[in-house]
Amino acid sequence: MNDQKIDQMIVDMSLYQCLECGKCTASCPRRLSGKEYSPRLLAHKVISEREDEAYIENSVWECLTCGLCRERCPSGVDFNRFILEMRTMLAETKGLKGYRAHDGAIHSWMRMMTVPHLKQNRLEWLDPSIKWASSGDVAFFTGCAPYFNVFFAGIDADTLSIARDSIRLLNFLDIKPVLLPDERCCGHDLLWSGDVENFERLCRLNYASFKDAGVKEIIVSCPECFQILSEHMPCVVPGFDIRVTLLLDLLQREMQLGSMAFRPLKRKVTYQDPCRLGRMLNRYAGPRELLGLIPEMEFREMENSGRGALCCGNCGFINCDASSKQIQVQRLKEALATGADMLVTACPKCMIHLTCTIRDPLMQGKKIQMEIRDLVSVLADQIE
Amino acid sequence: MEPVRILGICCNWSPFACYNAAGMAGMNTPANFQLIRVMCIGRINQALILRAFEFGADGVILLECTDEDCRYGPGPEVGHENVHRVRRILHLLGIRQERLVERTFGAHEKERLAQTLRDFTEEMATLGPLMSKSHKRDGLKS
View (cartoon, rainbow over the protein chains, first blue to last red):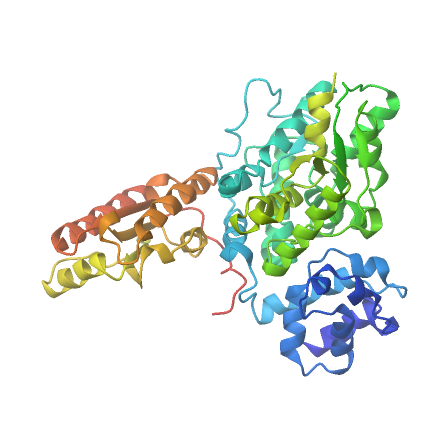
């Protein structure tokens, strides 16, 4: 391990400020599900027992990057960035080893997208009811949704419906978004698995394809894609001059203008705060306000929600295991305990991970069956 | 033009017996063909097939036992399912589905196996090298 780099990280991420209070570990979902993982101990080892490389390496890959530890830390230790930079360093020097979920298939296709002359067939799912354009000012970013639908067909996690319903909402607002045939993955999962080289390649290729289509603004519904496009891409691409808008923000603006009305939906719903949208992008009120617009819908809050929301069990398709499953079961039980009959989330990954547990044959006895829908799908179905 | 690179993933039982017998009989197999021998094609998952393409294969052929011959039970069926799914991902990536095929063999079909490999390699040579070659190998150190 590169000592100089780690010393710098310790300073940059305020690890010396750690009081060893242990709030991070006490709140870590990974730890609470029984894993030998402790953010506090990791900080300690990095500072004063760096020879325990095996422990440090293991911990860096065990982290879910959900950010609950950072939320709880009274000293402002930036754990997420620390994990990200450690992963980048470890992937460069030691490799990712066996921590990839699905044996790395997902990261594989993301890396295959780094080839410049790719002729993808990513728009075949479009049907005539969707109005879109091939060039113009405003584009919609579909991300990996077409790929996820194929790969996760076995558990019937329909993430493409999120893209479809997002465009339906945009069409309702008289926006005919550009859909790019050669758009690529945003690279979120490559970044969080430490593969910065290919992540940056994807950023540059995506920027080039936005520019080729003459796009000035890009609308994103996935919180992960939004975070990458709005916060990381400008650091990678010099002179980045495209406005990145989160679909939720756009809908909230339109809501304030009074341009949307909804049909009643007599359901009891609860909401899963995605870590990227909540703790990283600070969007807690928006989704709740939008759900509150639907008449007759009853909103129930989960025990752990908002800033203290529990992770969906996995991030970036790294290290999914029995502990992830346990977190998901706990989350679904929390959702059911509210008396809600539908779990609304705002991130395709939450949808995939939670659906995976619901469909797991080994979990059938656990009474965790519940309908999971994305926020935009709920809104698109009720709009009038 | 550089020659295409073909990867065969071969079940240890019937297809490998054919491959071995073909070699013993001095039959021609393509020079740009590499073979990975696994105990059963059911061991191969979608990720491993995708990774073959990621690492620069221009064509991948799965050599399997027939369904009823599998020593372990569902091996070839797992193979069919994986090929079906990976082909759909390859299609999204714009990679022609002909580049991933599966063929089943009984233990006595050495001529047919050698011929299949020659035909497949020839077909891939006609299609030419695949554009989508990844730059970096997986972030892994070998």
